[in-house]
Length: 519
Ligand code: FAD
Image (cartoon, rainbow, N blue to C red):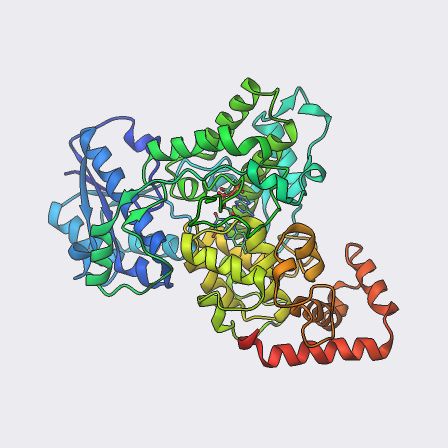
């Protein structure tokens, strides 16, 4: 072979220009790596999903006539890391060129660039040809340390790619329909929630491999993986989303419920969310494909789907996903070390078991352990909010998020967790800290009614812990948030409480933090 081309596990983009033509001089390599199973303790379904999808991608390429080496953990155990493995195959096939696609994660990009620099043969880096904004253009939109506004970025993207536009104006006259998108799921809405589209991919061999190699994982394993592992299944999931979830996607985007039993008759645990993040992040689907299909479906069914639903969905992918990536690359590697609020408390043990009396946290964590999935508001306003207001150490928070979700890859996990959720970047991603008391949870979910704790109380022994923790958090960081117009009202309300009441709340919060593992 003349050249060796590396395909990473999240580079399963069949539309990449690499595959436009076959040539017998090129050998592709795709490998299950020990280093990728250990940099954090992953959810078992996440490892299975990546390994199974890699296997499928390799088989599809081979069937189409490409020369591919697919290596399992058995084949790669003798190599310390990716560079050592690559060096071996470069020598073995005496190739004259090494090609790779730019990794989306800082850690891997660094490793590959450093490795390429040590080679005396020709090396060539390609973009992954996946995002709307490619690597070379990122710096036109994002500056290190700067606060960028997602909304302004999103509008530019809509104009530039002519998505949901009516000439120069946004379709329907408004850029953003978020105000129509904040409904709670009431009891009689529950029947609207569709059953999720789940697959039953046989991953028993992968599970055996993980056991054989003593790979440490978290979460519930099943030999039948429900996540999509190829483009075909990813497209099926996309169709399911358009057909069954899109009509209510925006309306109930922020809603949460534990009234649907994932193992009972009502298995609707993912509500109206698409669960396309794994297909997108592994690049089995491109964001362009997803957005185009959703808009096309909307145009064909506009009598039963409103623009607000579609705009809400497009904003997540064209707006948030690209924005988050821009923030990541503009600010790495410093971003990994930011800790604007000096959070340093240990993550409670129950984050790994779901064993807490707070019903909202119990539900979000147990569901994450069952399915390697929680929707955005569960991540941001339940687990994320708790860590924020309890001041949990970001290293531990990142480790949890990076491990537990099937879609967790650092470029998207880190700015969401450290930035949006924990405000550790001092406001680069979001203009305010997403801190909330039990009142928010009660407004957006049906958890509080059956909870052990009383959501309407703050200082009493059985009061919802989120209430006292919220006020304590806001009071402790008054210097950071007092001048923010979005939180000024909060401080006005705090000042309305008597000094005795403030004292009682602070005392309750401090007590809760002392017994955080028992909440
Ligand atoms: P849907 O609700 O159906 O949304 C559609 C798509 O929009 C998603 O698939 C995703 O690609 C994109 N999207 C939506 N919100 C965001 C966002 N804030 N950032 C980037 N893309 C977004 N997303 C990940 O892909 N990987 C992560 O590791 C990850 N970690 C997160 C950690 C925290 C603390 C928070 C608050 C959010 C995180 N997100 C992450 C963003 C978001 O929660 C998930 O993308 C979403 O829940 C995935 O489920 P879904 O596909 O059903 O999304």
